[in-house]
Image (cartoon, rainbow, N blue to C red; front, side):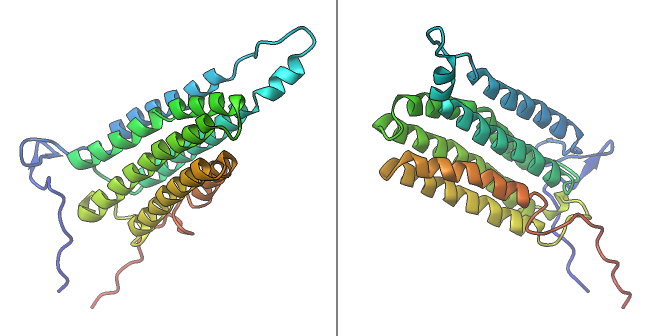
Length: 238
């Protein structure tokens, strides 16, 4: 007989809700998803505040708009990144049936880094307008890499927790989904750090290229590496 699946740390139940040791009740995902959607919506909206009419002399608006091209690049790469985070968050919680204290903390870490992404975006935009290859631009792209890598690390925390407590997962969750999510997050963490280092040591344009391309990778693998949500195959009787 196969060994039973490991239980989450909140197996006892009281009043229909699973209660962990210490009295913390596990819950369904509804409130977590609603709160996360609100935070992500605010974070992605704040990015647009950097899009302002530039100061200019009469007749030189076009040149002024062109000069602030880093603002447009920063908006594009951060909007795409946060948008893909929202898509991945939605796909992840389709595969989660309950949230315990550890998963709450991991999700809060993800929201913390997501909400903070507007700060390095503004720093990068301002620094690149001053000097594309200057010391400030190099520092700015390195700062962006650190925040983005921290966001990837929060995804690693989420997937690690789901792997440790599989009872939190929905029965519809694919066998390899958590592992592949871990691989995707680790790949992003490494890519952001390497891109940031290359931007700091060689040229900031290298980092910008990485920051624009990585959301495309995450969008293409939103449901995992070529995975599709499906019900598990029925087990043949012995």
